[in-house]
Structure formats: C-alpha cells, structure tokens
Length: 155
Image (tube, rainbow, N blue to C red):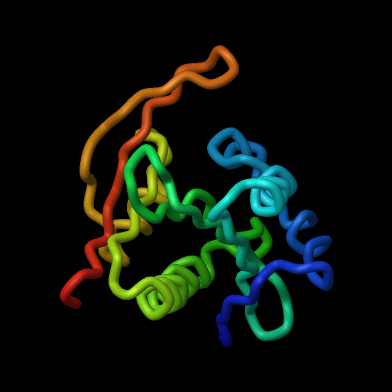
C-alpha cells in the first residue's frame, strides 16, 4: 500500500467526482462535486485526492473556519470500494504530516455527526479529541455534531 496526497486540479477532478460512498454514508457528508465548487469559489478552501499507488481512493477538503478561528478538515472520505483496508487511517496520518509541515503546528479541527461512529472512532485513533457538542440548522434540518481537535502545537 502506497498512500499519498495530491492536489485536485484539472487533471484529476473527474476521478474525485466519481468517488462513491454507500447510501448510508451519503447522508453524513456533502458530495465531492459540491466540495470542489467550494474549493473553486471560497477563500481558504483546499482539496486533496487520496491515492493508493496511482488510483484515487479518497478525498479531503480542508479550510480555515472563521467560526472556530482555525483550520478544519471539513470533508474526509474513502470510496466504498476501498474501505476497511486500513487506507483511511494511513491517509489521515499522511494528511496530518502534510498539515503540520504546511501550517507550522497549528491545531486541526474536524467535526462528525454524533451517531456516525465509524469516522468518530477513526479520528480518535489518530489523535483527535472530542472538544464539544453543537447543533446547527441547514435547509430545515437540524444537525448534531461533535467538534474534535488535534493538538499539533509543541509536538
């Protein structure tokens, strides 16, 4: 297994759009297409493809979130064909190394819906700690999430 990250650009954006989740997982995460649009039009939004050898197997969107005054891994997904193979954990560790080098040991945040247990456990395995519970409304639906933090300062 050779996991690495690569910026999404005009050469690989279609691969990113074609990555798929299970129907159950789709209710927890925005589409990669929406994420790429946000990367194109929002300030401080960045997208990375997760590769195993020469195959894109997942996607990460990270951004500077003004509401928490910090960097957030807003989207993380592994295509359903490549799940349960250890790729997610390796990809997160690669992203943490990348982030730490690029942003000088700033803390990294993420959030996960309270009943989305698989990513919650994965984030905890790589060092994220639950910081607080919060709710928000979007398009008439109430979301209940956990804000998590990975402290990288002083590592």
